[in-house]
Image (cartoon, rainbow, N blue to C red; front, side, top):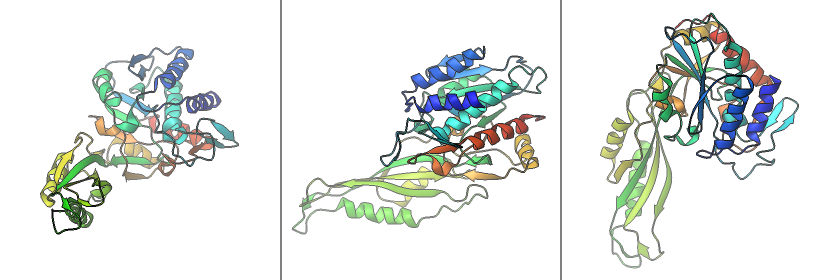
Length: 348
């Protein structure tokens, strides 16, 4: 795995913020070239097929993303230094999701020239995952052709996320009437917003998922007023909504809109909840290997995949987007063995 660890270190040393992934995309493409593997590109996305592809076989997609968030302020080390200290590799994107990407790439190369696979393998390194952008996996879906199963690489401690919550962001506006703060004038929009926020804080959606739990509402931003002595005539606040499989984002938006007086507008409703049955062969294979399964509260490229998918990868989601993010080399080595074991003998 040494050459893949070196690739990961090079990726960490190359800033790859969403919509600016070009240099890291080049690193991935140059690595594929070094293995004499043909590939296709669209924007900053790259994908390749195994050498002995047969159209009659089902297709398994191995996917992870090349972009990262920007570093938070309290890093104690250079986020781009790719410092390797024994088993620990520190750097932005090491855990989320560089380790998954290079491990899946290693798996793809491992199986690339195998003639008698019961399925076709495709590897895709996608862009814009961190911002759910239209220039990432969403624009690849029609390019890749028919996919029967996707293995999405994200840090899950190599346990199987068989479902993940949907994501929707709501912009809400409470309306009032301006007036002088010193007199009993106006209608305070901020107070109206606070009342609506209290309603949302105490509301529970009726249907609770066995795997994903309940729908979660979190008010994360609020803004009102421009001067201390003027009663604000409007107040805006933002609600982060994580839906389970019982509610589409559109349905959840309509329910929330009916609960409060504020105007409610969804930025997008396309990132719905996704999941795969426990009876799916990939899940059964994982269970036979001693892997556990769970529902993930975080969103990935699965949200825009119109085909069955499972999320699994080396690392820990709790390290993502944090200062001094790191991955263990031993986690990558374990991930490679686990991915290979999942695929060996798999029939879908």
